[in-house]
Amino acid sequence: MKAIEQIMTSSPVIPVIVIEDINDAVPMAKALVAGGLSVLEVTLRTDCGLQAIANIKQEVAGAIVGAGTVITPQDVDKAVAAGAEFLVSPGSTPTLIDAALNTTIPLLPGVASPSEAMLLLEQGISHMKFFPAQAAGGIPMLKSIAGPLPQIKFCPTGGVSESNAPDFLALPNVLCVGGTWMLDAALVAARDWSAIEEKARNAAQLVSA
Ligand SMILES: O=C(O)C(=O)C[C@H](O)[C@H](O)COP(=O)(O)O
Image (cartoon, rainbow, N blue to C red):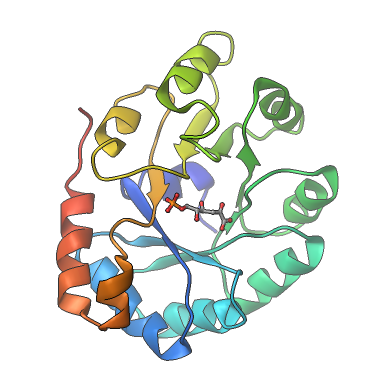
């Protein structure tokens, strides 16, 4: 098991992946890993999300694959069974947190406010996804939270782009960001994996502004 901090510091950007066609999962993951993005969040938004996690785990060397859009305890069980190495949720509920704390893999739960963050701190969770990052206040919000709650480390996701990612990454309470910009829809539709690899390489080289 990898601790969530180790996962969050493995690469500055976590691609948030939505797999529509199961045949895309392995070549897409290989392109992202080859470009330097080894931590992958495969969302459970599509029917083949779980199968995609299993295939990537088995076939893509160097990938650290987690499940995203984990919402219910059933999602937790299915993601663990598929071989996910970590879980990401858009928000946090007591039922979901309890289910996740009963597994051997870490959860990166979503929060959008200080009260939600404090509820998680009470349960010993200090690493969180800030979602939806841009809509929920973006960089000024994270700076404000760092005042009273500097011990919380975030992965802002939602509205993070190649242009604003360096500013997020420069914040002391941000370990990594999540985003979809390197998975340009037209390139995915064209299965242009080498172009995706190039976009991943650019994302992997992003550093704090
Ligand atoms: O599926 C989930 O569990 C989510 O939390 C949603 C993702 O974080 C967003 O899809 C990010 O999308 P962008 O705004 O394009 O970066």
